[in-house]
Length: 325
Image 1: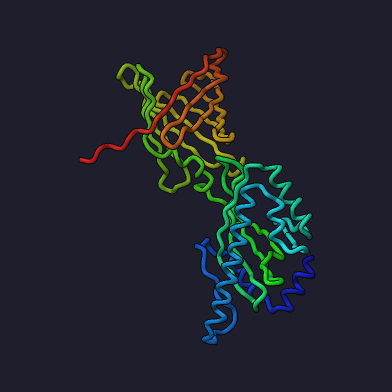
Image 2: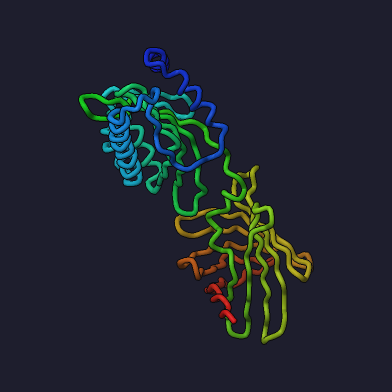
């Protein structure tokens, strides 16, 4: 398949465009741009209008691909390709033919039924009247609260019998997500919060660190109106374990750490700690968002030393903004 593609590139004079697409991999992401008609400007508006109409049809296919992908419709995706259409994934594995392409996507959707994609088109360039080269980036999310994966891609569109279809699509490694991007599923925590449990009130605030690589939380606990304890938590991305982790320190000398795992629409948080007196403690916590202005915090499997503690559940709400003076 690769030999056939290279032959196609040579025949249609695609080498200059292909090299530009490769060079663009090192460039930062940019907004969708309008395609530029290929060839030298000859002042003939008819050619430009023709490319504009063709570009609209190509973009319609791109939108149809995104719609089918997010609906988990493998057959609809395969129908956008030519009968002899070809795929090449990031590992260099190659697939040819609509039936094989449908199977590839069906397997993807079976493994990740909640997978969603966003496509950002960087350019659509026409070579002659019957070939277009599309390059861009994709953002994929396997499930709610999962960190997006970013990749690059190149697609060759061909016009056969007046209809535009995809002839070849190749995925390429995209930029590695930054620590800030890895924490985006928790960005809704930023703000001021309160848990009013009657005699015990916990006020908390969450903000981004100056470098944007951590979420910083401060908790202030009051019991019967008197200050009881302050707790600081730093949430960050662990590039070695490839997961979100947090570190906690309290004003009485205790400390601990937690590992965060997305679980559908909630977060499963495995926590361990050492109390000021040296006693070990552990718990399984679940954070369940309720919109963007509230969440439920459940703590189970609570063990302090050799003692098993009762489960705890609290509801935390976002503080309304202060009225303007």
